[in-house]
Image 1 (tube, helix red, strand yellow):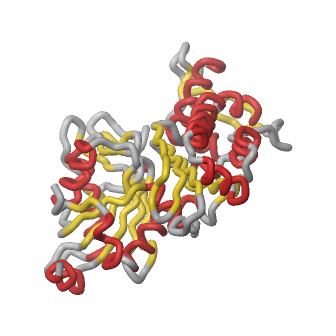
Image 2: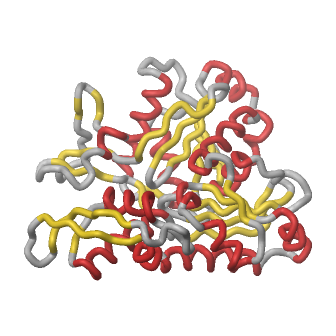
Length: 352
């Protein structure tokens, strides 16, 4: 549509990786310009976003409050399992990020490409469209996360050969086999980095009668977590929390081997999803994957031993994408560079 192209010349084109844990924003011609936690601080019992230093308490400012807020404040993560769980707070968060990137004065709202899990429902898609529109977007396009991750990882997904991506995010794991610029088979499972953190929290309760918060569990996962045995299995970390019996602050020492055992349930769920997807692949695509292997993206792919564990389960070569954390955002950035050519392949806010 000529009007769409004309207005596009005067608006900002941006890609948003709207993640459960972090939101990344890329601007056409500039690459990734923002990377902040998907957290908002609100007044307890309301959806009123708090202000700190004259700025909304969103992103890094709000994440520092997680698990440390007084009774009058709640730090909220408005996305759960990769989809919007709190409409109003997501709108406020998006508005803050869009304003931070484009500035407060906008004659025309930006055209926005938002990555979404491949398994979300029509109602969940509608929530993304509505949130983006209310946050100031002029036109919104939805790009499936596996496609964005494959583009960002530099896979030859448009060629007549199989490419496989496993994107382990905070709320969902996206597994897809692609060929000829489309998804041949895929599966989205709502098991990912957050579930690993919850598994660590549950283990600390069960084994040590110690309650720890989300940020502490995430720190344990990053520092000594692993999916497979490593040379550092004897490594330890001191964990502080609240004793479940006495209610008093206490610390405990935990080993890397214990954490690996605690992480087995979510890791096995991810591996089962990968094997199910492979079992559904056409024979010719499966044959290509023997040569091309599997590419891992997303923050969860950085868990030590994850590629090796997947290799053992599938018999295929598994490699980490360059900078796995930003793969999806880089994919939206590349898509933006070709938006006039590719935009008709996506669902957009004018279609519904």
